[in-house]
Length: 353
Image 1 (tube, rainbow, N blue to C red):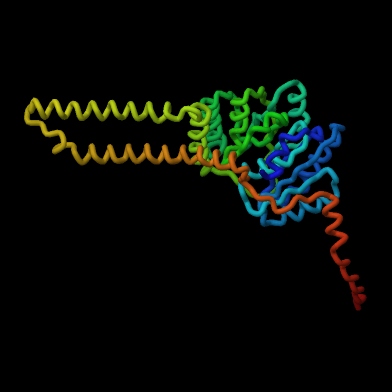
Image 2 (cartoon, rainbow, N blue to C red):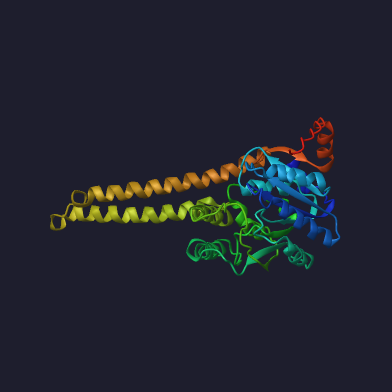
């Protein structure tokens, strides 16, 4: 098994680990890192900053590498390509060494100066402190209203009554993440997964800072992914160990309905009431409805079984959902700098006439 898969199970060596995934955030990456470093120094506890470059193509990696060269508390994880936010967070969690693990986005829409509010709730005995964006400045119809509906559905499906599942800004007690593995786009369901393991969860009001640079990675299109993930979450929370209860009740209902329809047709045929021929008058329509219904059930069954098989594969084989290109520390960066040839001296320019 990969060593990174077992790091969370090892004893913590630091007080805090701050995990920050970045994807094409060159304009604000340095500001995020500097603010986080300033806040963590103010807490006067041992800490590390785990900066995850999720396959950025705009120079974010170079900005983060330069920051790591200057800050001994920072560690850069460069992923080989863009694996998505869930895998980037899992990479950071796997390499975290702190007793308390804090996660926030790298787009500066989460204010690092609010980290003390989250860790304060962890110190009070909670296992998860989740940010809650009370006042959002996003578009009402494209962002806020769909978000409220999604959060209500997530709370209903998971049994965890949070107002804001979507924010990454959270603090976790280390042990609650030890048995947690993230797949697909499941990062928004971390509180639900932790609740399933008996975690104590609270919400902390946070600000929703308007994006100052870069482009939002989220839009209305993610609503469809959330809907599919919601179905997966409901299945995992309720039927993971008893899938027959899910498929069986639908099969029983459909079987009873089909038996009723066929029984009705059989009785009409035997009694020949009014010369009514069921299959002559409604045969094509009934056949089409039956075909569509069976096809939908097959697609759902295949999707859910695929979710279960993916988890079995990753858990049993120790495979990861990401690949790390390199792990860069300040010592590594200094060694690289010393190995590089010194730049040629610049030639003096001629004085202007």
